[in-house]
Amino acid sequence: MRDIRKTLISCGLQDLGSEGNRYTWCNNRTIPNIVREMLDRACATNSWLDRFRESWVENFEALHSDHSPIFLNSRQKNQATQRKMCKPRRFESLWVKYTNCERIIERSWNEALSDRVGEQTCDNIEKCRIGLLSWSKAKFGNLRKEIADSESRLKKIRKGVLTNRQKTEEEQIK
Image 1: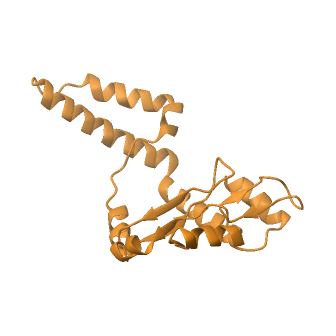
Image 2: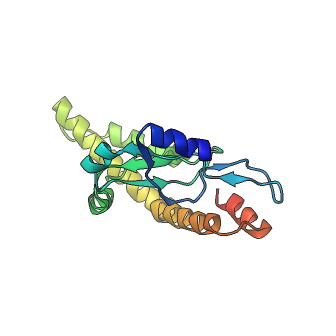
Image 3: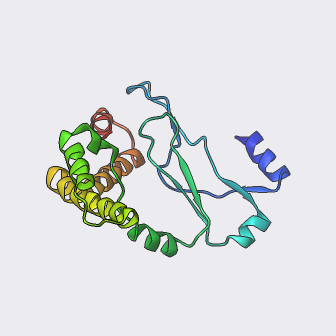
């Protein structure tokens, strides 16, 4: 660690610190052989920090890797949060596993409301979007809320000392 600090100083870099998950790497073993470390970091020069004073770094949860993704945002926190709230609904890959999804898409594309191809395409996309969203809500409930709740529980687990019970709960959440 001392060598890393010396290298950062000689290159004129500073560790930006981070929020979120305390560790960025895990060997994915069971207790007592589990090892978690803070390996990945975001660094910047003083001139970069002067230019992006409101920047922040967040360590996300590792779901499919031994490394946690780190996110460097150069926008102010309140701007990033506002933008997140306006995020449009997107197609969920999980939907294709269900035959109802295919039926909704087919029905949307087989009903022509307009003779003009461009208008018909836009109408079909909108009907498909509305149909899929209402089917998804009825079938799965609020997936985004469930994912956010699970991520919050993972963060709480990973901030403390890891016990066998917490490791089991972590695996269930994943």
